[in-house]
Amino acid sequence: MKDLVRRAELENEIFVASAACRRDEIGSDTYLGTREKLDEMGIPYTKRRAVQITKADYENYDLIVGMDDENMRDLQRLSNGDPQKKLHLLMEFAGEHRGVADPWYTGDFDATFRDVQRGCSAILSELQKRRREP
Image (cartoon, rainbow, N blue to C red; front, side, top):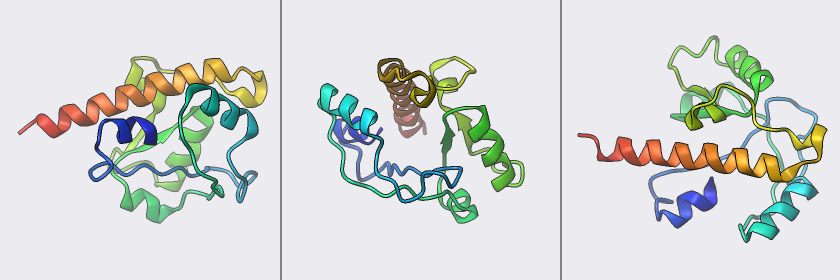
């Protein structure tokens, strides 16, 4: 998503961050298979340390996107039922109600990349549309 926002020259208008719903990867860098796929696709990334999403994040962000139904359940609990309607499943933006293909279980980073690319491109299109509306 960060690369799409950068290429659209919207870094000053759209801030993108990533946070985990669960604690098992807190402090970890981007997974090796993900880095390899990003390298293959020519998408830049930086070293990071995974953090866990907080209740304050719910208040501070306009849009919070989950990758699968488990993320959405965690986010619903964190936000006390999403009273501000900020929570969305990524693939919904691409017209599908399903989770992103999870390479943790499948090892298929190509399918995951396709899903994430489609979903993020659709989010960016939606945000650009909202910018143009009066």
